[in-house]
Amino acid sequence: MNDISEILAVMPHRYPFLLIDRVLEMDDTKIRAVKNVSANEPHFQGHFPETPVMPGVLVVEAMAQAGGFLLFSQVEDREGKLIYFTGIDKCRFRKPVVPGDQLIFEVELVAKRSTFAKIKGRALVGDEVVCEAEMMSALANR
Image 1 (cartoon, rainbow, N blue to C red):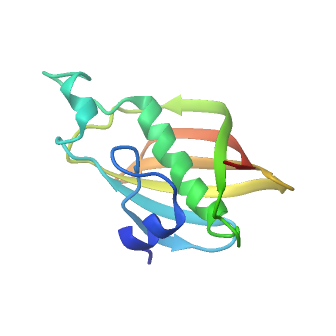
Image 2: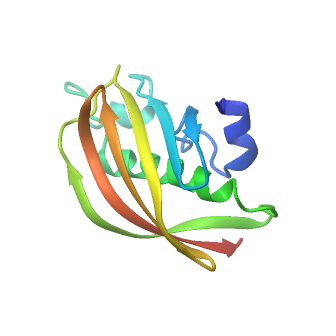
């Protein structure tokens, strides 16, 4: 559905912190997005050199970015605005994510009021859930 050029047009993130590669499906309340995990990513140099594992915080951040794309794409005047991560609840890591994995993020909007939103997401590798969380955000001026 949305390739990297369309993601770059909506998201303020850039290398090395843009963590979604493609949007597969999206409507007003749900999104499915992809992150291809590559051994070339800089965090694998130290986490861990002999047994590379994607840091859980980056899995959550990538899931939040998928939700952020869903939310930010609905903001008409994005210029000069950011969506800040304001909270994480019920976060669980089920399995390590390693180079070569393809993460699929399934994120849905739970609640939205004014500039605040709550989303619920899960990250999958194949059919296995590797992470799930509820996340909160706020839209603000830069």
